[in-house]
Length: 143
Image (cartoon, rainbow, N blue to C red; front, side, top):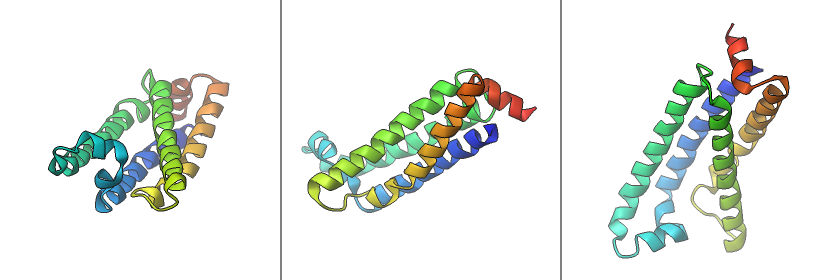
């Protein structure tokens, strides 16, 4: 069960990278209203800013995995729950945007890959919490 948290979290980071690639290829940075507002006077900056922020997000996920999740350091529960919240918001935001525009938006095709992972990770974290702290449960799994 505790190795499930590690696998699910790493899978979440990989899916985020795939999702970011879809958004980049289909020019999310040109479609997303807040980005258009931010870069209205310098649209040429939107693409590199989007790429840099997504690379940063991916590496932040890897840091979280290799620093907190894999070795089951103190604070792992907080880190994992923050990622669950962030990615859940991502799913909801893409869904609401698609419903409101009645169409595709960049990232919509891959955003639903998050749903089973989030359910799996949420369930694994809840199970670990009921058995004790998530970090203690994962440390016990590592033996």
